[in-house]
Image (cartoon, rainbow, N blue to C red; front, top):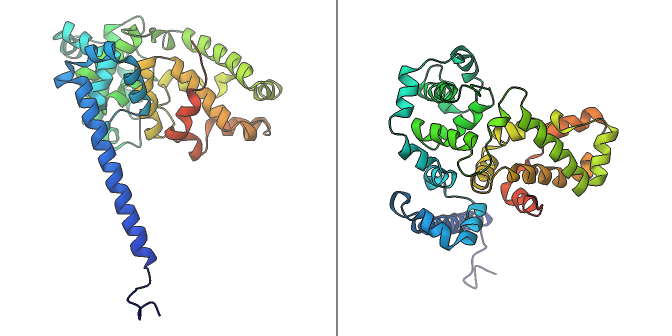
Amino acid sequence: MARLMGFQKADPHRIAKGAFVLLSFCCYHREERSIRKWRKMIGVGGNDWKHYVRRNPHVVKRRIRKGIPDCLRGLVWQLISGSRDLLLMNPGVYETLVIYETSASELEIIRDISRTFPSHIFFQQRHGPGQRSLYNILKAYSVYDRDVGYVQGMGFLAGLLLLYMSEEDAFWLLVALLKGAVHAPMEGLYQPGLPLVQQYLSQFEKLVMEHMPKLGQHFVEEMINPSMYASQWFITVFSYSFPFHLTLRVWDVFLYEGIKVVFQVGLALLRFCHDDLVKLPFEKLLHALRNFPEEATDPDVLLPIAFTFKSS
């Protein structure tokens, strides 16, 4: 009857394909609009960035929380971290550290290189460009700051930065983070005894008890403390074992707002899984805290939860 009246039965496969094409088209144009907005914010080579931030701090914060366009991420990370200024103030320093200095940590760095993002193609080739660049940065930093030297977790920070910028740019961003160019220095995370890690874990434990007392009490009863599951959250800023798409979004906000974001995201993970976690005994609980479900690591779901936790 439909054919007789001039109508054809809808093909569900064609409808689905058309919907996918339309969705892709909308996503593409939304991304293009976002890129245009960001280019206007930062200006040519980042020249307009500081002026824009001073005039529109709330706009910048909102857009960073929504995610920095991937094609601009490397440049924006350098601008919001203060590392671009360090680079410009120290011409030739990185080259000197790499070429002319020696480090007591060189063998240790070489040993650990293959353990940093082993599944990422950029770092898989033994002595390949990724591993060489990572070695250079870590060796240079161990010379630049001999009091801190080298600690394995630093490789994940440097490795993530290398995916978005040159060796020298990544080195100065690492310096900006550890020395505190904009936010509190992170070097205490890597000093002997890891004093800042211990401090942050103690604070995190108190925050869990404050915001989720039922779960906090369950942790006490099962003898679970944050050092068993959260140390790497702080040492690598979620770059060690979390999905890459979540790590990047966390780093966008972390570089702009500081270490409080690590606390917020950690609390959000626990909040998301709260009802399941409070039912688990020790071994299953520890496994769950080290292996969060995929739906818990969706940045569009997790980050809005994280931002509901207010902390200083």
